[in-house]
Image (cartoon, rainbow, N blue to C red; front, side, top):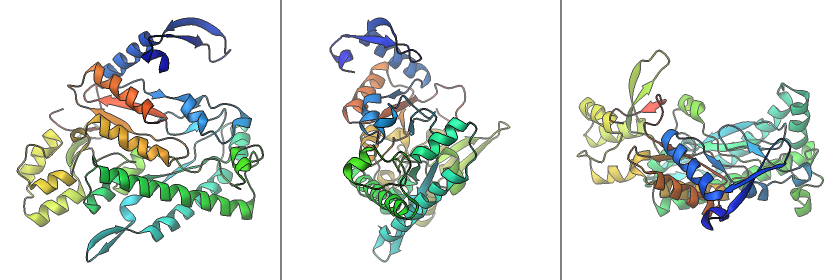
Length: 367
């Protein structure tokens, strides 16, 4: 990235032999990446130096890649072992409104770490090398989903400083409680076998698990749980879901539907209209509703990235998040997003310009 800014050159290395293949223009490579990402949504980027700065087991070697969604940096033969807390359920409803139920969140995180640690031992691995490495590092990834649902219930606009503050508080709390839970397990069950020589040992911290927190996309499990996915904003308030036989179903966000019915502006015509646009921007609903019920395409890429960067500060592994662009976005917009993600300390970035795939799981009619 420095060479891109300086219009310099980089050495291309064969990842199998680590031999130098040739020297190329950094700017030329970067321009090709951004152009193809604008056209197709791929490739995303990962910043391996940033990832390895957080590698707690450098004595086992460098991290060279991630799992397919990018949230789980892995050393050779390590495996993913993920679970997510539904933040939509971590609230108390009082006479004054909703507040975060910190006690319940702490208990749920502790239980989640315990569960995932058990999975390391219960799992059946496809290769003996994966079995050995997974037990050696005991890497787990406890994450969250339903952050946007939590914000809606708290009346917080997703693209706001308040949203960044809430993300800071909640994910820092999750990380602290996850580490406490892993330390407690280490007292009872022992540290993970590769703990000696790790950065945890250097800091005098006993850990049962390597890097306990991760933020996964939660695509399927969030649908099952009826929650917003990962730390993503709401995709749309009324939208079309493509199912396997090609059928299209209109679904309405339950929090939005409840507010619409309570405030008296719910109608099937309005839901159909929103399904074609995906947002409330051109509707007559109250302004405060528009402020709270922001969707992916209401939010600029800068705010998407700022929230991802905030989440990354308190996530041991990495953060899976899609930076959504409207169909009208330019290659230069993608370039700015990649540079901002690097500047703010993200470990990677995935972009998607609407309509660049022949099929997409979620869609709104006008796009």
